[in-house]
Length: 142
Image (tube, rainbow, N blue to C red; front, side, top):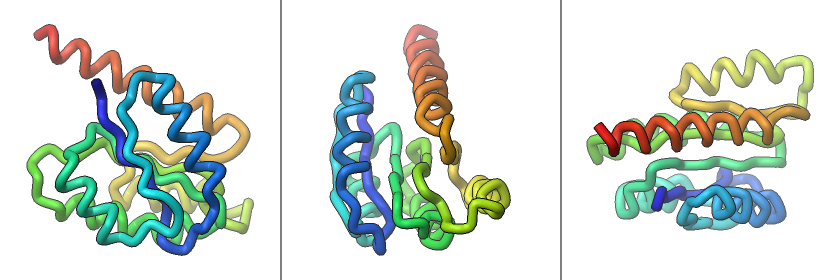
């Protein structure tokens, strides 16, 4: 079974998105460790190191994802566990809707494998998961 660690940025105290995302991932075959609201960077890095998930999902709705996300990406890159998990972020990345595309590009440059926002975010995330699952199943058969 694929493993996912689910977290948010340290300043985000919203929980409904984490509950929804946990159910969404479980329905798609993931074992999920939900780290809860206002997730400290250290807790996220500790979970990545100890659990060695296939996927780290950062879900945010307070609009600070573009501000706090890059530090998470750098931290995951520095965990030093060999293969790092696929890293994605989604939700309300910022409060200035005119800057979302630029903020998403900056998050991708910072190290996120997927950045999901806007009305089609969940559909695009589901496509990402389907591609990730099919690639990992193919590598298991090789």
